[in-house]
Image 1: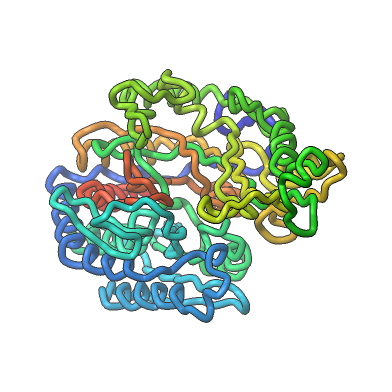
Image 2: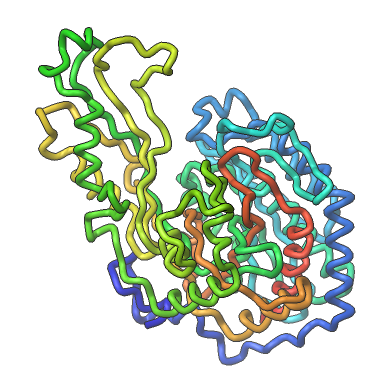
Length: 515
């Protein structure tokens, strides 16, 4: 079984559509870059990061440009508009030959940056689409005393701390630098279009409208370069092979219209928290963490299992030791759900899991009087396997939680998203075309001195499933800088600048190889 033959229901497919890995019979394999050219790309990108990108990213980190889901007043606050304008101005300042840039604003939606650079390769008709985003997750707590979400700090190891730099404000700057590096060396390349959005951390609910509006400008997309993913280590180039989907939303249980004396009511009025626990027992085995409904599972393709084994051989126990365990996993005190590196990789990429990411209706400990609370609300984050449809899963989850409520309590589950687009569907990469596999491995060896690694990611990038449907023949280079301990979304998030420099050069090499 390969990546194009899912073992469970996924988004609709058409057998008449050519497989994503198929190449036109006329496609010409580009000659590999010489070692001198690869070195020149790396030198160019390294200087660009030191001189231009890091200073700009420091300014970007200072702006609390939170995604619309976390800042309902984003229009009034103007932070998203600020970082979009700043990034657009930086791109235009680079004066890439014949570059065209536009900040596109559809009514009522977050803005996107679109830039176009014509091909320098004679006869080239295809397009490389480069993607990133500029919106951020909220601050979160627990930052080191010398750090903060909106306070950039570059340490002596080249780690740039602050919210959003690695996830993934760097993308637009790296994309333009990768283009500049090729042009500076006189290396021919195809046409390139950049699409930088500002709604990704909210599930990209604005993006489908922009893809519809911009599709005529995108052209014949042959390669998608997405710079919003992660890495298994900082020693080689890592290609993302899959992304999980997600259903998030608020589960609320109401039993009273107002709080009452706990001594007077307990024993008669059921606790909203206890009812909520019963509802979660429908969804999850609390002893193992396994999701109970089979509709939220799918079979893992054999190719992905084999790749997980190969990645586990490289990463080893670091796949679980890299987390900041409270009882010190490095010393063996804390244990994960499994210490088998292969199963650990599959658990975080191909198996559904539930997390409670927020709570409402519960006072802080200092204000917790003897009151039986009227309601409890949890923010749920349900990660789905790549082949499970996110919209359908959100509907099933809502019915599972709301039907036949214990004690006839008022139970509501409001999934995030908009009508017709609840939940986010994951993504399983198409089979890799020979030219791209060769190019990426060559880029990893040239820029890192190590072969290409393959790894699934537990996060969600809604764009990828959208592009897979809109451009079924396109090859996908999904990669990023979120390696061990980079901690996107949490405290002390950092961007590994030395890794990012080499990644930018590797992107240049892959773009140059596009047939």
